[in-house]
Image (cartoon, rainbow, N blue to C red; front, side, top):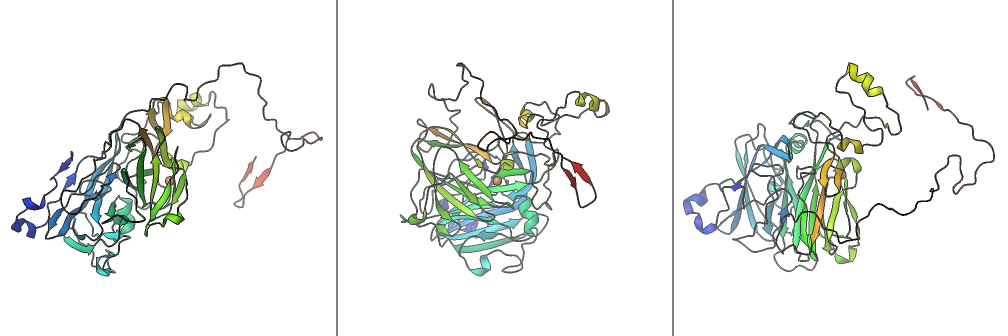
Amino acid sequence: MTGITGGAIAASAVSRVALAALPEPILQTSPTTMPPLVPNTGRTYNPVVTLNGWTLPWRMNNGVKEFHLVAEPVVREMAPGFKAHLWGYNGQSPGPTIEVVEGDRVRIFVTNKLPEHTSVHWHGQRLPNGMDGVAGLTQPAIQPGKTFVYEFMARRPGTFMYHPHADEMTQMAMGMMGFWVTHPKAKHPMIDEVDRDFCFLLNSYDIDPGSYTPKTMTMLDFNLWSWNSRIFPGIDSLNVRLNDKVRIRVGNLTMTNHPMHLHGHEFVITGTDGGPTPKSTRWPEVTTDIAVGQMRQFEFLADEEGDWAFHCHKSHHTMNAMGHNVPNLIGVDHSGIAKKINKLIPDYMVMGERGMADMTEMEMPIPDNTAPMMTGEGPFGSVEMGGMFSVLKVRRNQKSGDYSNPGWYKHPKGTVAHEYNGPLAEPARFKSGGGQSMPRSQRPVTPMEVNVRKPNGGHENH
Ligand SMILES: [Cu+2]
């Protein structure tokens, strides 16, 4: 695996003396999607691919899978040209994905290199109460500089997460979280085998344009909506082969729900926080809402070639850093205004007179280290998206096991929406004052003005 320093440690290569010590911490320096980590020790399974992330290598020690997580400040490139100073594990935020097999005995060393205490909660797992990672309740907090050991058996297969349960508001707002997948130990009646298995966490940040560190007091008004601490166009595409069976696992560690929407295919929810769903409970959908703290895994047959959008359906979540306190100026004539204001404020610009799409063309001066609000060049122009957006690329020629980006889809001739060049009749247009499904009033319509008086004494004319 390129980009990993330290490397996976084979059990045979580790001496008895070394096994008494901590497993060497393995760091990841790159934010690109790493190829699946095929297990070379322990029981075999079909590994997942973490979007813009990686799986943590382990070592076997007398039949126990040993991992070493290091909680530390990291610099995460959230999109090309935009870096955030976050907290994470082993060099990145989110931390590495941990993959084990049902029935595995797992030992995780956690070293705290943060300036404050922490803990790790293994979200969704069946484990001894004292391993649950709630600082103060089930264990003392891990003080800066200290290393703790967690040990338990991965009792049920499924999709899990890990995150601190100590100063959670700060530490999760700073990016401390990671994914966990427990693969079934044998063929499972409710868990299908798939060709591709992707996973990522939904997270959000509030980072002022031009700055690097998230504001940790923000409760709802985040300005960066990310998958694995990446924002479009920094989120890698999900590249699959035509007729692959695909599973996507998503966990939500933001403060709001995210309706995840896939174009061109129908999927079924095959698993929740509590494990695989009985097959009789599954129905086809194209959008599924993932609530706060929830995990969902869904599956579909990728049987339509093309570049299919895959995104959160809250339209504000497919935007990058922006001020939301902007009035709607659609239809307002600004001619001449900008010039006058520029005499007083040289950088002033008028925005939104025809909608917000102009933003993508505007040569707007933005502070250093700021993600453009919406961007991403597609083969037909700007995609006008940011935040929680990516593309499912389904290709006939993608090799099985190849996760590389095949480039843009080449549409067969005659299958792309195009401008109509035939004769045009004057189209029927909307007329105010009725005339559609309701009968038009016979009385002349008098324009009306409403005078609203607000409780605080101010008033506005409409
Ligand atoms: Cu969303």
